[in-house]
Length: 241
Image (cartoon, rainbow, N blue to C red; front, side, top):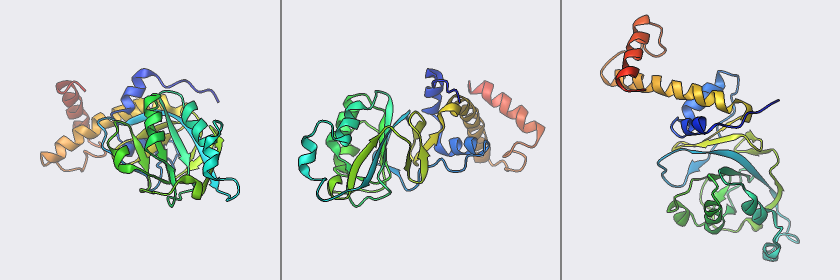
């Protein structure tokens, strides 16, 4: 399977479409499981988080191996993943949906931000969430968690296929986060999904405007009347959409 890199234009399109629209576009292609379950934004962001997936997997910790001394090793997988995550990518962590111990804290999240990452997602929890909420950096998790990851999690595989919130995530998949949550776009579909979602968003904005004027959704949403298409065309021209 060949995969074209996400273009700059389509990356920008994805910054301005909803995960709801993306999941619908993917559903049209048979993808039902693309919205990461029980994951929420920590802060409020002006634009969507968009970036290629760079993954980290946790397994259950083992008491004789996972001690604070482990962090002294520069090759510790959690630390190494933070230092290796490429600029523009989103670090996605498989924490086995277990938020009883933190996947990371504000220092590692800040380091990712300074290295130019696009965001971070875990199906577990983060510690130091008040600090993370104040950073100009996208972070998504299940709920706050104070204990260090070592109490429950052992970092293992870096940039291998994982599951996050019941969704398969492959390195290079496109991760999009908005105010509702996180969607995963298979890499080979990212450009066409971005274009379709851009068009869908224009139509949905038109429909919203019509409904707020008092119009019925019958024949409007979906657009089963010819006059709807004509009105939409005129609306796009008038609103430069």
